[in-house]
Structure formats: C-alpha cells, structure tokens
View (tube, rainbow, N blue to C red):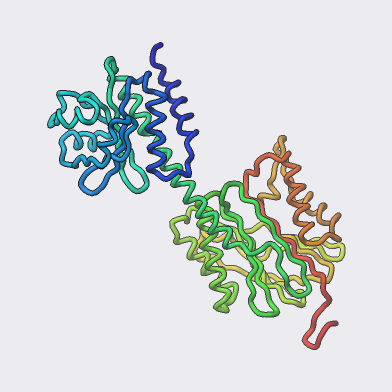
Length: 409
C-alpha cells in the first residue's frame, strides 16, 4: 500500500493522545519509543529504538527496546562526534557509510551503520530518538515521517508545559477570590463566578476596611483566558494594597488606571466597580466603565453609573464618587456583561430587563439563592451551551435595621 501522509499524521496524533501526559519526560519518551517501533516499524522499516538524554558534553543512552542491547545502557556519545554535530544542526539525520566522521565500529554496536535519529527538545533536556533501518527504506518517506514525529512530540511538550502553567495560573486566580459568602453586619452577601476558560478575566473581592466598612469590588478584563487573568491579578493586588494603606478611593482607582496603562497588557482594558459599604447602609462607589449595578429598593429600581472610563486606555482619566443608601430589605445586584450578554441560538441576549424582572420576582430569597437563580436562568436562556464569556454575580441584601452613632433606630 502506498504511503499516505494524512493517514500517517492521524495515526501519530492518536498514538500521542493515548500516552499519559502526567508521565515525566523520560517515561513519556520511553513510551513513545516503544510505540513508534510497534506502530510504524513495518511501515517505515525502523527497528532497534534507542533513547539518549543530553548530559553535559554529550548524550547518554538510557533506553533500548532490544533486549540484548542492555549492556549499552550508559554509553555516552560526545558532542564532538561529527555525526552528532550533523544531528544537532539538522534536528533529523539519516546516517549511512558516507556520513562524515562516522565511526563504523561504534555504529555497528548501536545496531548497524544505517540508522536515523531525531532530536527533540524536552522541558529540561534535549533528547535523541534513534532507530536502526531495515533494507528497503525510503529516504523521502523517512524524512517526512520522522520530521512529523519530531514536530508532534515537541508540540506535545509545549502543550503539556502550557497546561501546567495554566493550572498554576488557575490556582493563583482562585486564591485571589474570597469565599463566596461574606458576613457583614446587617447584610447578606454572596458571589459566584464562572470562567469561560480554565482561567478568566472576571473577579470579585470583599476587602475589610474597618469594623464598620467593607470594600466590595467586581471587575471584568477585556477578553478572557490567561492574559486577562494576569491583568486581574495586578488589579486585585493593587486595589487591596491601596485600600489597606488608607488611600482615598478615587486616588487608588486613578493610580491603578495609570499602572494598567503602562503595563505590557495595555492593549487591554478592565472595567471596575468598587464601593465602600458602611454598616448603616451608606455606599460610596466608583464605577469605572463597568456594567451598572442595579439597586432594588422599596419598589424602585436605579443603576449605579457615577465614576469614569474603564481602567487602562487613558492614563490621566479622572473618577468621581457616587452615593446611594441601602435601606433594610433592599438588594444591590452587581454583575459582569457575561450575564447580560448571554445569548441563545437566535443571538438574542439575556439582557438587563430579564435580570431586573428576575430579581424583582425573587426579592424574598437569600443572596445565595438569588445569585444562583440569576446564574441558572442565564444558563438556561443560553440553552446550556458553553459560556463564551466569563460570568460573575454579587448580591448584597440589607437585612438589618438602621444604625446610628447611638444605637439601632
């Protein structure tokens, strides 16, 4: 049967997909070595698989799949060996009797003068996979196949390293988010956040300021994924540091804006709502280009819009403080546009009107159940397809009585 490049590629992809990515690099490549000879030995006319690991001034043989070659384990091929130089330069090389500087006796020990080797770059070392060649091998097919194998293995290493870094980023991001339930005098507070990818660009935070004041933040970095998550980390850290140092909130936001503008991610921007909630229900806030939170209070509905532009694009943006009062029984709902813009199959968005109507119907629920209702209804509206944007909701429900300096009113 003639060689089919597409079929070969698919078979190689399937082979790598079957291999446990949690194996360390040495074990992974030993498995690849075995499977390559088993799967493609007849097709490519290769045998005598051997694995070398870069070590100092040479490569050491650490694995051979031929039983009678165990005595070769530990053999070191120096970097100065001319055929080794050819492999390092070309990443894939076919050796025969015409190869410059070839040591025929050494090559005979390693399974025959006719052999082929590929160089792959692992996360910690360079590795060589070498194979003996049977009679009848085809140079064009061999070069195509071995270069394809090398590229797929190298891509696998990059993918594994990326996934590892992604999981590290996910752990860092999760450590930044506080527990969803927050206890504050006279208030029932709950938050939930769903990233569209492994890590996201949404965040929320609860920052104690004094015993009587709580900082509440919700933000949304443009886009999602790893770069958005890195930007969120910087904003959360900067916001906490600024509040802890007792800076005025407008100064903190303006400083954050300048920092984000100067960062390497300055092509992105981040919307932010930050409020300082007093135990008596007073809320001073700044809305930096964020989806306006909705205040539900004694039959009235209002939005919190005072503030300024999103953080990042304009270094000298100015921000104003807004003020509202949360009466007993009132609810403040903060959310990101992943909720409002959740779309169904007809491209119709969930929208602020549905959010408003839903909360009005469920005012008696706890903040946790209210948040879950908003998340669930938006999910159902989108026919439970994958979320294409990060989604976050905070519900702040005033349950306590009014407080004054002399006690409860």
